Every structure is written in structure tokens, then in C-alpha cells.
Length: 264
Image 1 (cartoon, helix red, strand yellow):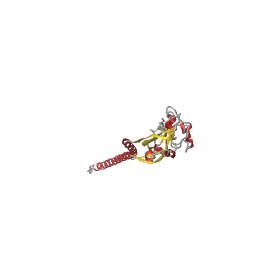
Image 2 (image 1 turned 90 degrees about the horizontal axis):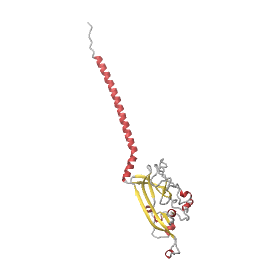
Image 3 (image 1 turned 30 degrees about the vertical axis):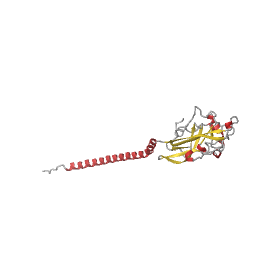
Image 4 (image 1 turned 90 degrees about the vertical axis):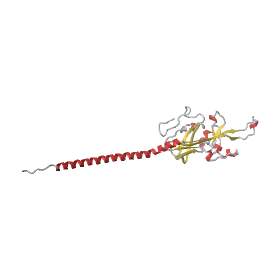
């Protein structure tokens, strides 16, 4: 992990001592972005990248909108179509197929799960190809309940709000050698999905509020110091002027009090 500069702060350089993952080919194996916990300061409302061990790859989140979390302004980022696409929508994502390209919305992670037929998606196949929903009943993808997003405080790069939602699916296929699976259709079957939501604590909000107030505090303190300095200088100047005036009057009075005698 690189923390040598603001731009590279938190950037992940190696994962398991390697600069590339062994699970994908070509540029799909590149390790890019942060480790998911640290981000540089002064992030832009554009995009962020981080490496996800669950997906065994780097993912890109695109800026979605300005939000406020517990009174703290932030940038909300969410994954675009390229994260769960296997080449259907974006041709250069074909290297994520791992041998078989599925319709967009499913990520094949079998290579990093001991070749188990495990596929990841958003809950209820949110943001996925309609073919997955058409094969099942009871699924109703809703943005507010099933989206994956990350909110950053842009000045510090602190994570203000995160909702890590993911669905684990298994590829169901007919097996002629097993009567139980002989007539099953080939389909992507959801096993379970999880939701890990974290919002920054009140203590962190207080710390950020104090941090944001520091420039105003510095200006007030600086103005106060300058005002006190000017007042001191003015006081010294008035004191010097008053002292000189008093000495001058005493000198005049002393000369006027000399007695005079007439000559005889």
C-alpha cells in the first residue's frame, strides 16, 4: 500500500505479494485503486477504484450524486455496468468470463473459489440482464434496498456511509447421472444475499465538524491577535506622545519659576 503522497494515499500495490491476480487474464488481472479502507484527500466527483477480495478483482465506482450523512456533505459512488459485465455490454470485459461469458449482471468468481460454480450479483439481480429475473418468481429488485454504494467525505477521503450488498448465486445445470437433477433447467439460482451497512459514528462526525471549523477558528484567532497587536502598538504610541508632552510642560514651568531681582 502506498501512502507517499495525497494522490497515491491508500493505493494498493500488491495483493498476496503479487501485483496481479492469478484468476483473470490480460488487464482484468491488474490491481488498481485502494484497498477499500483508505482514500486520498480531495477526491473528485468522478470515479474511484478499489480492489475487492470478495470479487478477486479491482472495481470502479462512478459518482452518482451529492448527499449528506449526519449533516456532513459527501459524494455518493455506485458501481456502473462495467463491474458486473462479462463482455456483453463492454467488449474489453470479456477477460472476466473465465471460459464462459454469462449475460451482464453476473460475475464469475469460480476461479478464486476453488472452481466452485459461484457467481456474484447484486441482490435480486438488481442491475442485471432481465433473463435472470424471467427465469424465477418472487424477485423484485429495488434500488433503495438492493443497490451497492459508497459515500466519501471529499475533503478528507473518510468513508461516511457504505452499504455492501451482494448476492451469491449457483449455476444450476441438468445432470443425467443424477435423477434429481436430470430435468432441471439451466439457470442462475440465488442462494443468499447479505447487506453490510456502516455509517460513521457521532464521534467521527464531531471530529469532522471541528476539523471543518478550524479555518474559521484560525481566521478569528488571527484577527484577534492582529487587533491586540495593533492596540498594543497604539497604546505604546499614545504613551510616548503623552510622556513627551508632560516633559515639555515641566521644562517650561521650571524656566518660568526662576525668581527675578532688580539691580540696585
